[in-house]
Each structure stands twice: as C-alpha cells, then as structure tokens.
Image (cartoon, rainbow, N blue to C red; front, side, top):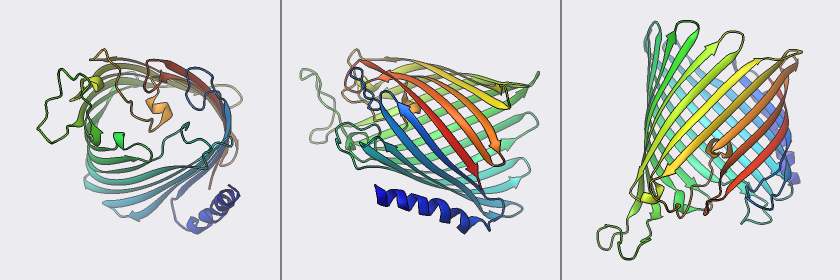
Length: 357
C-alpha cells in the first residue's frame, strides 16, 4: 500500500512537468474522499465503507495540421476502499482526425482500458470487477447548417479478470444525429446496434426434456444482438434541460437473456447561489425479460453507475480560485442483485477537489 501511494505521489508531481512544454495540453488532477453505504451491493446486511480516489486526466495534441490532427488522452485513477481493496484504472485513447471537406470529417480511434483489483482480504466480495477492454473504430461526421450526424463503427474486446463467462467480442454500429430546432432547442437521435459473442459462455440445458438445438459435439455459445433507439431534447438558456427516452431490445440465442427495456432520463444544470453550479441527473429503467426465469448469471458491472437500473445524482460545483474547483456529489442507485430477483439500493457521498495544469 505504501509503495503504491509513493508511486502515485511521484507520478502526480513528475508527470505534469514532463508535458508542460506541449502546447494546447489539457491536464486535470482530482482527489476525492467519500462514503458508500452499500459498497458490496447487498440487499441485506449492508456494508458501508469510506473511499479515497485519485485521478489524473491528460489530453495531449500530437499532431496539428490544416487537415490532419491527432490527440493522445491518458487517464489514470486509483481508488482505496477501506482496508478491503484497491482499484487501479489505466486508460489510453488515441484519436486521429482527417478533414475531408469543410463539412465532412473522418476519425479513427483506438482505446485500451485496464482495471485491476488488488490487496483484497476477501476476493468473494468485491465492490468492482477487474477487466481489460480494447476498443477500435472509425467514424464519419457530416455537418450541415442545422444538422450534424456521426456514423460510428467499432470493434471491441472485453476480458474480465475473474469471470470468463462474460468475456465478449463486440461489434457496434451507431448513428448519432443532432438537429437545431427553433426556440434554442436541439433534437438528439441515436440508433445503435451491438452484436456480442461470448466465447466462454456455454449455454446450459436448463430443461433436459428440451435440450438446446446445437450440432452434436459442438457446444453452443451465447450470442446477443442489442438494438437501441434514443430520442431527446436539449434546451439551453439560463439553465440546461435535457430529457431523453431510450428503447432497448436484446435478442439472445439464450432466451433467459432476451429482454425489452424502456429508459427515461433527465439532466438539468443551472447557476445556484454564490457562483455555485447545480446539476441534477435522474434515470429510471423498466426491463422485462422474455423468459419468466431469471438469467443464470448477470454480467458484472463494467461501470456501477452506468449499469444500475435507477439512478439519481446531485452535484454542486464551485470554482475556488484559478484552475481549481470544488465539487460535492450525492448518488442514489438501485439495481437487481446477480443470481436473484432481489434489489439493492446504495447511497454515496463524495467531495472532490480538481486542479487544471
């Protein structure tokens, strides 16, 4: 533990010095202290823990030409959860953009993200899951007078540290469209398709009387196709209001993983008092599985906030002095426990200090 903290302190002081000579750089360091009243996401006998989070985000331009640009983004984070576990996250993102015409831009992206869990006293109870995520893709952006569209194609590989069952090869096609409307309104539309293959997810024969149809001698693996459509509005004047509706349809060759979901979310932000900015985000998701049986396993959370069914987040932020800000955050989330139909709730409180180099 001491060696890790010393290493983080050295990086925090030396890394900015190495890149200070780069023009148009953007480096942000954060330190957060907080408390989670249900760190292990239990329906009963909740366990609360305090946590300390350190984070460094660097955006470094590598190439800046008239038609060609490249940006390297490095993100490093470390989280200490009580005395139970340490979570380290490293993410590298490389973007290369080419201006085809004044209204058409192509972009290539390659990203690698690694999360490691260490120093665990009880590996059977983890607040997060370790994984290695590789993501590569291309996109094409079209810009007209009141119209902006982005077509994206991605190839993704996800490997979990402690569970091969949910390792996946994912292909994704996404279309994002923004349209300027009267009265300072912006319309948002997203259409998304994901094809996921789980090589290690051998489908069990849940009903011996009706075995799964598969070639003899070749075990059938799980394949999912997730279709998603999202529509929303964004209104900005003195305040920001951004409501969204999302419909999801997952079709799987294992009926227990096929579902329909309706998701409603809203984001608002406005000045509060004493130059404090207030932000409120809420989301409710209603999910119905095709089968009455619960899935034998549920996918580990890649991101606890994103995977939680119902979420409420309240933020207050204020600039303390130049390049430094303070943020207070409250989070309430609710989701189903894996391997059961029971629901858990959790609340967390945190205070974050950010500094831009």
